[in-house]
Length: 275
Image (spheres, rainbow, N blue to C red):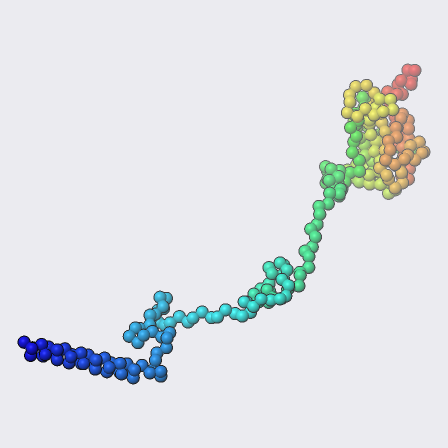
């Protein structure tokens, strides 16, 4: 019994000594393998673990790291900020932000509308129906009327009767050298293209009636259209652009022409004979 206990204690002591010697050998081997020259860097992975590849890497090749940020963009400038015009028109990124661009010249001012009369509308209104390229110098007034009695204009040259015009057939007669628009042609070179007008007007006393009807009389007037050599009534030159009444047996003359135009109103002559 005592012998077995002693054998048990001896075997336990031997196993304890064996474990101590093995630990000592392991410590000595670890101290030799891990030396200052063979220690791995702290940031490198352990030798038994492989470095993991990035998620976006492919088998064809590794993606190069992004370039470092440029110092010119991150560096703050002490210069004043550029104007908005220079910032919008700049084409570079560095110089446009650091150097102010010269301002462009102001745009030309927008032309304003001109509402002044040009005369084109009046020329279109006064255009002749027979020849639109000719502008008429005269238009009939609202008081224009046809006479109820005959009015005859006799044309004489050196006491010779040339022609007779039935004036009562129309309310207005235009005299001149422009054959395309006039009613009675004057061939003398001293006369204007649109020389004068004989106009029947409805008047009451010394006032014109205009568009009203009834009452008054229809009388004959002559108006000179600002001709070069004038219009003559009974040897007197009439004022231009003014109505002058022409009565029975009055003599008209245009410019320097020798022809005389004598007005005869048969009804007035008959009244004089009766009276």
